[in-house]
Amino acid sequence: MDTITANIPTRPKRKFVDENLTVDRWQKIEVYFKSLLDRSIRSIQHLEQWLLDRSELESVLEEEQAWRYIKMNIDTTDEKLAKDFAFWIQEISPKVAPFSHQLNIKLNCSPYLKELDNEKYRIYLRGLKKAIEIYRDENIPLIVEMETKQQEYGAIAAKMSVEIDGEKMTMQKAAQLLKDTNREKREEVYNKINNRRLQDVDILDKLFDDLIALRQKIAKNAGFDNYRDYKFAAMGRFDYTPDDCYAFHQSIAKEIMPIIEGFDKHRMQTMGLQDYRPWDTSVDPSGKAPLKPFEDGEDLINKSIRCFERIRPYYGECLGTMKAMKHLDLESKEGKAPGGFNYPLYEIGVPFIYMNAVGSQRDLVTMVHEGGHAIHSFLSRDLPLADFKSVPSEVAELASMSMELISMDSWDEFYDNNEELKRAKKEQMQKVLEGLPWIAAIDRFQQWIYTTPHTADERRIEWQNIMSELGSSVVNWEGYEKAHQNIWQRQLHLFEVPFYYIEYGMAQLGAIAMWRSYKQLGETALNNYDAALKLGYTKSIGELYQTAGIEFNFSQQYVKELADFIKAELADMN
Image (cartoon, rainbow, N blue to C red):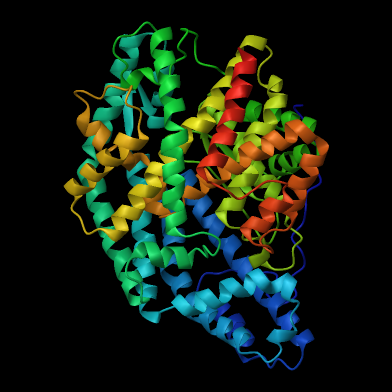
């Protein structure tokens, strides 16, 4: 499918904000906030129209910020793009925040609030009341400073590169060579990558210390003992507590770590090694060359469209529309910030997928993962309020991680060799489990970071303590202790989106359950999946999972049940 036919959506006609609004100074949008604040609301109908107008304004502004962020990440060397985003973070967002707070209060105090449909607005109003509770004027400049400083991580990481065999490479591209079947080559590549990362350890430590101090100050201003407790409130974590997270960590340590160490021992034996080192963890243990599911970005998207079409034609149409609208930037290149994401665009309703593809199996998984997010955006695009579309990560990641597993039935679009296809599926199933301990480790680390005063050296010691429970004891880090102590610095979330990570683990468990349901029920399971995604965030997390036909559960017993299912699927492939 080299030519994709797609219906190109057009932006809905605006009813409140000027069609040709260009945001180059605050005054151009201030008038809309003042209009909403000053408007007289004399009936339930007036209130609902007020909500729609506010949502339109928020959608326009969120989409404008999104494009500035996307463009800046695509080319971190372009000073104008960096300035455009910095202008938004420093000049627009801080001025929006007080008005948003006043609008929240206006809504909360409206005599017509009780006439709103409770089922429709229950979740929205729950979050709004919490936002009012934790808002502080004095935090606005601190949040601006924090958001500006967070962007330094991407700039530092984007500058990292290594030279291998005379070629200058991004860290992502160099990491592909860790799949080389020549062990000496892998060790050489690992050392170059590691040595480059170690150059920035102190810089990243200083950046992280600064971010921690800012975040703790924000929390104290809002009346919280620490940033963890503040962030749980700010993220609207109504459906679970920090103690539930600790229970998750424990379940993973008890039920998943023995399986992971079993994988590592089997790899070590297959490779005939007496000493299993960090550069041995990515290569195919039987000595096969790295999987190469696609050639370039164009090939990746075309194969992904065909793959999604075979699951449901609508899913393929979603990706086809994004391709036609150029809402994709897939290939890794110098100056491009690391990472991958699907960025919802609430006004046009067609999201943007950004990633750093280098031709690997991991890139295939990233593409179908972000494609799952994209389908979620399409399915919820007609919800009337932007806040209804702004789903919690525990649900957003359920959409994407489920698609990683469901899409495996169509991965022959990427692999025409049956042995390679089988290998890709086995690798994916193993990685589903392998990712859980890392997720638990990062979350446990964050909980400790913000509840325990510490130095950078004490932080390294705590990380090693966590790794003793949630890291594989099979891997020998002798001589690479410093690399092991600082490996957490690779995790973008710690720097840029604090506490956004355990959701991946909770959603991964949900995705395994969703895949199990799909294997058992087929189209009925997909209907349940679609039904849950269409609800956006108009139900609680537990209710959304229930609509999808699964449980929001991370007890040790449930984790064991899902792990046993994956083990059985792996056994069937042998």
